Every structure is written in C-alpha cells, then in structure tokens.
Length: 277
Ligand code: DGL
Image 1 (tube, protein in one colour):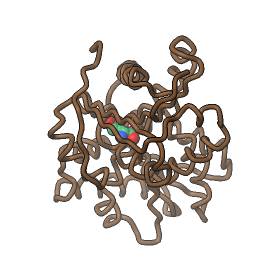
Image 2 (image 1 turned 180 degrees about the vertical axis):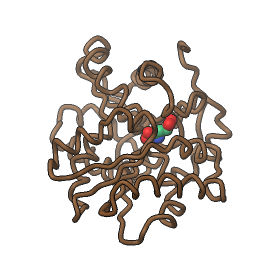
Image 3 (image 1 turned 90 degrees about the horizontal axis):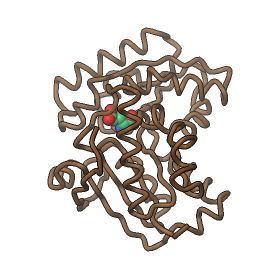
Image 4 (image 1 turned 30 degrees about the horizontal axis):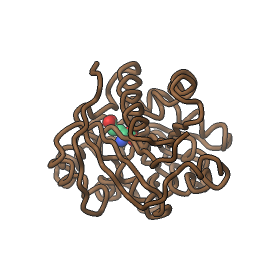
C-alpha cells in the first residue's frame, strides 16, 4: 500500500466541523476533504441511495491515494459504513480502512450524563437506523436514549439560513419534541456534523442545565488513539501538513460557505464523480 493523505468525507459542509478538530489535534498529516454538495442532503434519502452515493465518494478518495477514510457524516456512517467495510473494502483493497463516527461517539457519550437520560438529534436516516440506540446500549447499558429526527435542520444549514426566525422555529420544534420524551434528559448529542452550526439556536431553546455535545473533538481524539494503536496504518500516512478540498458542486460556493464550518479560509476544486445514480 502506498502512503497517502487521510480522506474525510461528508455529504456536504458538515464534515468540515470534524476536519477542523481533527487538524487541530493531528496537524502533521495531509488531508483530502470531499463534500458531495451536489447531492446533499443525504439524510432524507433511502438506504440504497445513501450507500451508493457514499461508495462513489469513498472510491474517489481512494483514487486520490488515501489509505484511510473517515466518514465524517453520521448518515453515511449509519447507512453505508458496514456494507462498505464488509462487502466493498475486501475487493477494493483489504489493507485500506474506512471508519465512521458513530461508534467513537457512542463510546464516550455515557460519560457526560448524570441522569442516564441522553437525547440524540440527527437526520431521518441516522435516527431510523437506530445506530446510536444500538451502539450506546453496548457501551452504556444503563443509559436510556431518546431520539428525534430533524429533517429541516441540514437544509437550513446548507442554505446558510441558520440565524433567522425560520431556523429558530424548526430548532425549537424538534428540541421540544425531544425533551417532551423525558424531563430527565441532561445531555443532547448533536448526532449530525452540520448541527454545530445551529448551536446558538439550539442553546437558546434548551434549558441551561442540559449539555450539548458536538462530535468534532470526540472524533479527533478517537482518531489519535486509533493511529497510536494501528502503527502500520500510521506509517502509511503522509505528513506534509497539507489540506485539499473537493466538492461535487460549485467550488466558489464551497469556499465561501465552507469557511463558516471550517473556521478558516479554504480553497476547493470541483470533482466529477465517475457514475451518477
Ligand atoms: N452531516 C451529515 C450527518 O452527520 C448529514 C447531512 C445530510 O443530511 O446530508 O449526518
């Protein structure tokens, strides 16, 4: 296996919130980011569509020389990761790795709650998969998980409409629905990488004693641990400190809007996917 950069994938901009934390924790590596903005949002699409879209993007990142790819998207992690790991990866290259962000998040979420009542907000795809319920149960059987799908939140973020009355309306609606399931919820996991951009509005509609948990730092720490314990993979990662950005849509838009998520200026290129469904 040739050495190369770490690939980071998301349906659109959300994964940039994860890349931001990963590059802060592990700045020495080279990174290639791919956002499938042309086909975002994924969250309301069928299982098959999410799997096919994600696989196409994973193949593109492998073509860019990435030995390791992180699906910085809960929807893709919930709907596509396992099939890609079990069915596609052995045929593409068994030495390469594709990792998701649900397991590492589930591994720590129970440490934040005192009441053992945790809320999870996510896309319809992530919530319907019950991935968080299943994974948190494995790690913290004493924790009760309450879920709420928020199908409007990603479109609001993708369209840069986070800070207006419309966004507030849909944020309040879903936070109320979640908290109505249990008055003991003391921790809400933002189980979608787009949601940190809505945090001001979410905070406004959530009691101050309820913790809001974003995934970026959790995923970054988990990747650092993974690389420490997988020396063979670590040795196949190039360390030039470079960041490359690709989008399946318009690069000018990506550069402008992506900066909000990444917290720093970025320069992207358009990438053409090989096939389209
Ligand atoms: N950012 C993705 C996630 O974490 C979802 C975005 C989408 O619906 O495309 O689930």
